[in-house]
Image (cartoon, rainbow, N blue to C red):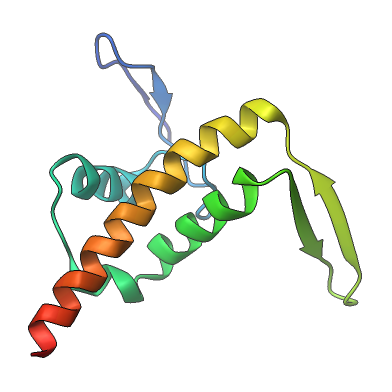
Length: 111
């Protein structure tokens, strides 16, 4: 099941489950964006497989090329489009801040 969200002036996004792909929007990415927008920290997000997958996907697509390894160990070099890089760079910066906030909080709580 998918639904389209209309948020007035914001771009309409379709709820999806693309397995931590940078362009998806679902309950996990909603939380990640909420943490960013509210400048909150969650020390447990550093171990969250969905967050780490989402951050990794954004990291892979923000550069000019990304590399894919198949089941036989062969590496393919794929070029990311400029639009893709621009979009993912914005996402990556936000998720990097969420990650940095979480690391700072975890460090403080260790003391």
